[in-house]
Amino acid sequence: MEESFNLKESLEGITTKLISWLDSIILNLPNFLLAVIVFILFYFIAKYTGKLANKLLKRSVKQASIRQITVKVIKAIVILIGFFIALGILDLNKVLTSVLAGAGVLGLAIGFAVQGTLNNTFSGILLSFLPEIQIGDWIESNSYAGAVYEINLRNIVIKQSDNNYVVIPNSKILEEPFKNFSHTSRSRVMLECGVGYSSNLEEVKKMTIETIGAHFKQKENEEVEFMFTEFGGSSINFVVRFWTDVQKNRDILIAKDIAIIEIKKTFDKNGINIPFPIRTIDFSNTLKTEKE
Image (cartoon, rainbow, N blue to C red; front, side, top):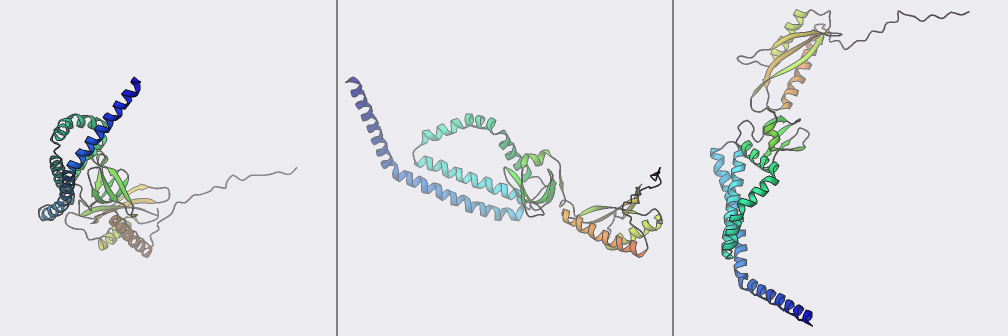
């Protein structure tokens, strides 16, 4: 009997609590709707503020990555302002105070849990302001090569020559070496080749330098360099180095393509042989058979 009475009291208590909550929801429904409208309004304000900030920054900031990160920070600040105003409309001052008070403790806990993510975030901020790497630059890093498509707070996105995108964590870019082809307008191209042992080496050197110089104009303090490097197994090998306009890896491939075609034409015209590897088989030890 006593257990039945306690159960009845518990059900009445739960019912009373639910009714009080329902009354609170009905009473606060206008404030809740107003808070939602304010938050949505601030979301659109953040969107258009970001566009306006981007237009203004284009006039004074040339680096696209700096503009992107600045716009994202501005939008985040505007949305946070709208969030706190919405909490104020809901008369959740105590909740707001608790959120701000617990942010420090929660921040420490989350910080230990997501150290890698925070590392990438700070690395993304540094990369955004780093002049050595910008949107559109052609880079090589972490065994990948491509044009920088995006720099955000988590990773850097590059578009490879095969039209595929590669996502690399920001910390990997800062911790590993990277090569930027777009940072300089000129680059030295190195091409290796070989000629037959019967060739006149002085003539080979002269005609190679003249051929490269005719197709790749060398500017001030630039020159075509030619050096024989070794006595190979079937050829005397050399390397020719020359300067050309390079903004990405494809420009180097194009320069090598032109250089190989023109050197081959010149060598064919002057009877210079470019030998391929030769293997000689010796049959001097013949096998003899005797018939009894």
